[in-house]
Image (cartoon, rainbow, N blue to C red; front, side):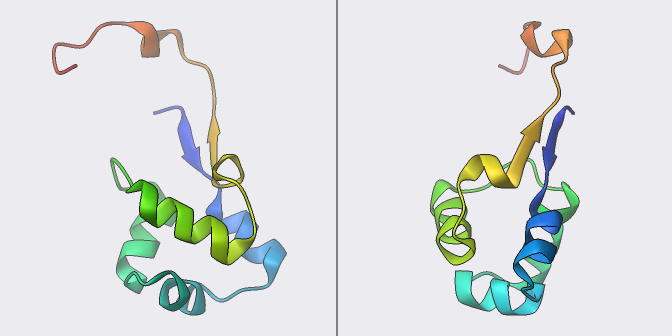
Length: 78
């Protein structure tokens, strides 16, 4: 999938421990770890907003996208 989570680099730049970020945002360390690794299929906007507030960033700072023409193809699931 061409959408990548770039949270790790932001955590390093801010000098924050993942454990502390999870506590501030109100999610488990496991949930944060799954998001950081890109192993989740979605994230609630509220959680995304809390991450942005805690890190002083915008959603685009947490996610990146590499264009893939296949993303424009119609899936039967959509």
